[in-house]
Amino acid sequence: MTQATPQITDSHCHLDFPDFGHELDLVVARAVAAGVTRMVTICTRLRNEPQVRGIAEAYAPVFYAAGTHPMSAAEEPMVTVDDLVALARHPKFVGIGETGLDYHYTAESAEVQQRSLRVHIAAAQETGLPLIVHARDADEDMARILAEGYRERAYACVMHCFSSGAGLARAALDLGFYLSMSGIAAFPKSKELRDIFAAAPLDRILLETDAPYLAPPPHRGRRNEPAYTAHTARVGADLFGLDYTAFAAQTQANFDRLFAKAASWQEAA
Image (cartoon, rainbow, N blue to C red; front, side, top):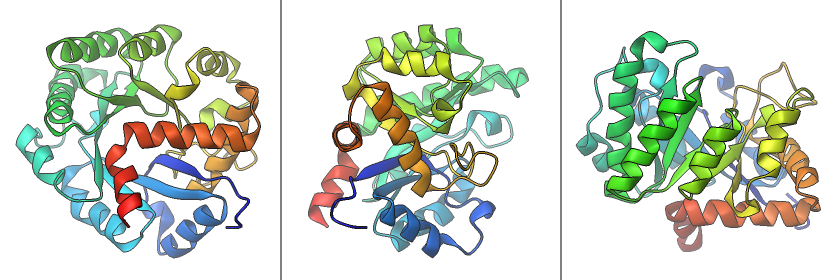
C-alpha cells in the first residue's frame, strides 16, 4: 500500500469459508495493498469459533465476531448470553453476531430465529460490543424486536449488508444504528437501495464485502474478497458527492466509533 492510498475497513467478511482455501496470505496482502487495512471476519456457527479466532490471531489486520446466523438457528444449539460474553473477552473479538432474521429461505424457523436474536441483543447490551444484524424479508419483526430490546437497555448495532426497505432503514437509524454498504449497492439495478443509503446520515455508513459473496462490479459473479471493498467505497463516495479520500476517512471514523474495541487495539498495537 502506498502512503497515498486512503484507508478503509471491510467490516464484514468470512475468511474461514472454504472459498479462500490456502490463499489467505495473498487475500490479506491484496486487501492491504488496496487500502483495506482492517477486516472483521465473522463466525456464523459457534462450533467454528476456534478456526475464526485463529485467523484473527494469525493476521494483524483481522478482527473477528461470532454468533449464530439466523439461517442456522434451527440447526445449532441455542447460544447463551454467557457463551457470547465469554468469547468477548478475547482482545480481537469486536462484535456480537451475525444474528438476525431471514424469512426468505428459513421462514419456518422464525420463532427460534427471534429467540436467538434476543439472546444476541442481550449479549451486546452486556458487553457493550456492537450487534451485527442480518435481515432478509423480515423487516416488520426485525424493526419491532430491535426497538423492544433498545427500550429495555441501549445497545449499538450495524445492519450488515443492508438491502432491506426504507422503513427498516429509518427504524434502525432512528435507534442510532448503522447501515453497512456491500457490493449490492454497486449493482446497476440497485438504484432504490442506493437512494436509501443516500438519504442516511453520512456518519452512520460502514463498508463491507460479505466476502466470498456479492462481489461488486467489475468482479460480479466471481469470488469476492476484502480488497474489493474499494469498489463499493467508490460508489459510496459518488453517492454522497464526496471524493474518495473524504468518503474513506468518514467511513473509517464511523467504524472506529462503532467498533471502538478494534480502534483501541489498533492504537495499542
